Length: 152
Image (cartoon, rainbow, N blue to C red; front, side):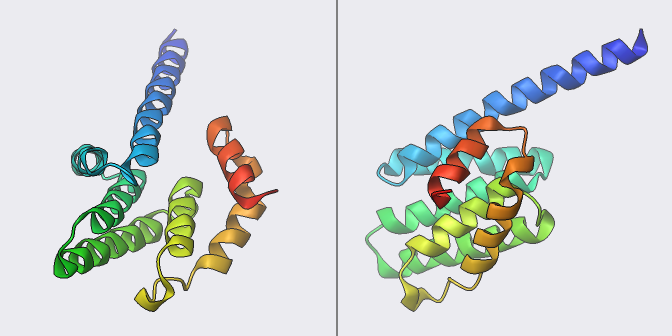
């Protein structure tokens, strides 16, 4: 009986986590073009990271900071948000180097930012990692997105 209860708890945690990630992914889609969504992504992911210390939330937080760099006008604030996002993303990858979603976020960021910012060192590494390991995830939404993004 204890085993069944434990399995049910784990199942519901996975379902809740999957729904939770969908919320973050929706904010990611809106955040690039919406300062309000970018701020909400930062707030929500910072809170989740503080609570759980899970690197996935640090990845979402980093992307929110990158988006804010795009939305602010002041060049010093742009660089501040960009550098904070870069540091947060690198910490997330270092904490969980096998996390497909964090590596995908870093890849997309590095391919998107201007080269003169100097944040492009891991493009080939991340592409190779994602190409090799994307089939291993149980998250079908993530698998489909990676496959489409990498044009596999």
